[in-house]
Length: 299
Image (cartoon, rainbow, N blue to C red):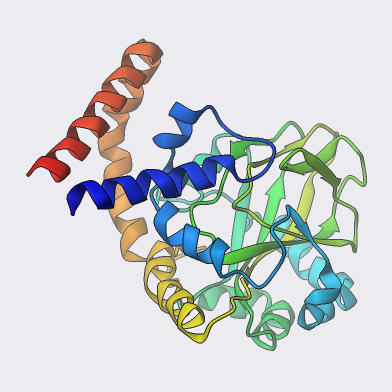
């Protein structure tokens, strides 16, 4: 039975690795954080009710149209937050989902995150929050800033239960500021929206001289069967909510983000080891993961 479970896990990782035209090296994908959820994501892809392609047509998601219709209103609240320096990295290293983005300049302000509570968003962005409340398929939303020179390295998001929506608010309107999903490039423009599958390999860069501010949303992936929709909903209410991170005091911090804060402090030694000898670090990481897998299988 253990060998069957291990074989299924490896099959799910291989499915993820081969999905799309652009991929990480196989060994890196095997130990990448996006592989941990590969067995669940296999079912999300298998029972998906939308085509398996990097970008999806927005006309299939008519419920999202009010966001683009009111983009000027949304932009005004985002710019007010930016002027008050409220769009920022996590204050206490307590953002389990996006912490790795902060080192390259990316910043965020949460408007909603699954079932977590963010009173700061309701107080500071009432009009945007009202628009989001009227669209049940939007499970998470934030204002996301990418400054000049900022970048996001190639990655897959770890959970395939959602699709990613970007609405340009205050962008450079410049080809040098773009996101690339499975080798297909999209340059953000004010008032223009795009929907893509974040389980494909993607990366972003702002090579212009201006900030980029967008509305960033997780939209529930349409699934073909009621039991799959129920599973996706349950995972959103539990696992994804547990990754919630606060904008400021009074907002909810999920259990995973609280644990991440502790692990971040412990990880300082790991980062020193990585800086000292990257090759030795990668070897040690691979050995530990293989050893842990062997203990699980052989125990």
